[in-house]
Image 1 (cartoon, rainbow, N blue to C red):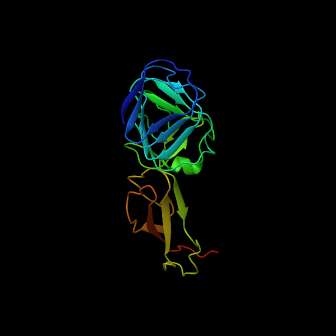
Image 2: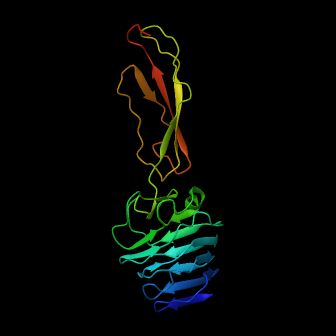
Image 3: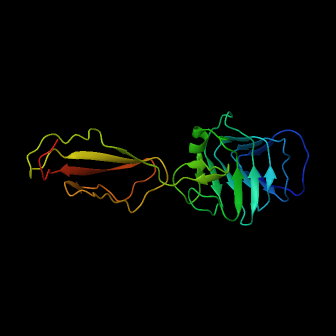
Length: 219
């Protein structure tokens, strides 16, 4: 419990464990050796603007990585096979969704460096949705990931000028919150109505109706 500062570049062996209630503060670059696994067991790693390349990243219970405001990199080897438990909260990240952080701290895990399940356990403070790995190997918060499930798209038979069966569409989101959502039709025979909300939160969905009214005979 309390704060421990690593003030120099270290070469110790063994794991670096941050237990519940404790804060490990980096006071220099390479403060954690490259061969050391970082095991977050309820505590906080405070980068304080310093970078370090480590071995594996392991989360054993709800923990935090706090990034600093100046340019620095926390680099980990592929940790996708490591079991995680709890949520990893990343604070101090100053980029935009789905993009590299232009300033401040970067967390690099490499392509495929964390599993989909591990990514779902990461929360960027101030952002919604799960984490993603960018092509650069950097962790970032996800933007909206929308998927449309219309069920059947067959409106059935109808006479010209008479509305056919209305179909309800479901728009779901597995990424960050989507706001100011609208649905429009570029064909006057298909009319969109009853959009249930203009916001689709992470893990949520909205519905809307489409009604087809044929203007001419056809198949």
